[in-house]
Length: 376
Ligand code: PMP
Image 1: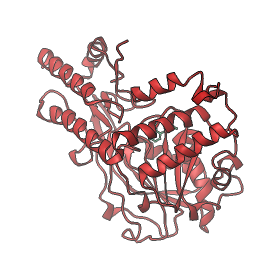
Image 2 (image 1 turned 90 degrees about the horizontal axis):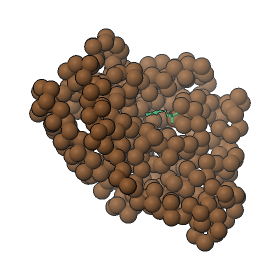
Image 3 (image 1 turned 180 degrees about the horizontal axis):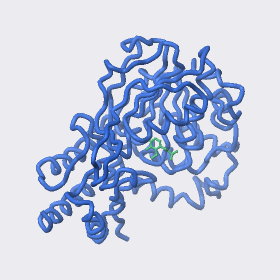
Image 4 (image 1 turned 30 degrees about the vertical axis):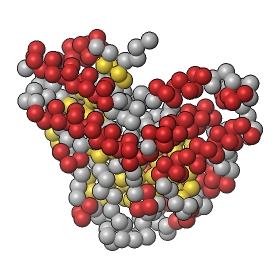
């Protein structure tokens, strides 16, 4: 069976080797006579799967023992509430600051307003015409020197890869340089987690929904420094209190066992590939090929400032929005799927996560060239 090239933003393409291994182990995991789905989360087989996944992830990230890895549920969306519920208890007044670089950081900011005085430390929102519509758009990242962080904020939130806008920032500041050394940096890394090495030691915590680079939907990965655990507000649901999740090795409630197993296979696959430094080189090669093509084309338009273009999510526009549906139909006929842009910004978007091979990107470029030739 020929698999199509899947450019979805998430849930998204999985490494084929991982899917094959899961298929081979579906009915009988390691001679247990059971599928992982059927196992007790407290049994020794699943405990082994869980602890290996934790250890492999720690190894991949080179993560210090100062941080805990929590396997949670509710997605990054639930974390937008779970984070304030866990961190606001550390400060006298409920305050948190946000850097707005796209739709996901805006959502995080909005959710936090239910619990705290949530202020904007910096924003790149601007009114732009995109896809024929005037709208609030984000196409760059404000320089860190201008970020205004309150010294008594519970945390500073940053989304380091805005999946919808395609804006990626690795300018993770030292909080001391921002004049707020006690304020932990909290980073939503959902859509570029495991695509490159990351300076987690600059942060108090990072979090990610698994369904882009780490595995199937249903698992949320939270990496949090120990000193930030144990300060939850009394109203924090006990299943979302990091202290409870940490004390029970992510088994305070029944965890998403199959999603953890699949993520564990992805971690092993990444290690076999040569780890994050190696996968980063492959991701650079794919992004260079695609952006390089767009840059020399006078037909397609890239909305994002060149210094912060995401290696994972590549939004682009045709000269007229009216051509989008013909473009998408032609793409589908060549097995190039899920290239429609997010409804909030329109246009087109190719997500090229770890599991998308260079061959898929080159096939897309061939189609882009042909479409340009026949419509340019
Ligand atoms: N943050 C980012 C950067 C995302 O890309 C997404 C989902 N696409 C979310 C948060 C929300 O994640 P979830 O749907 O898993 O709650």
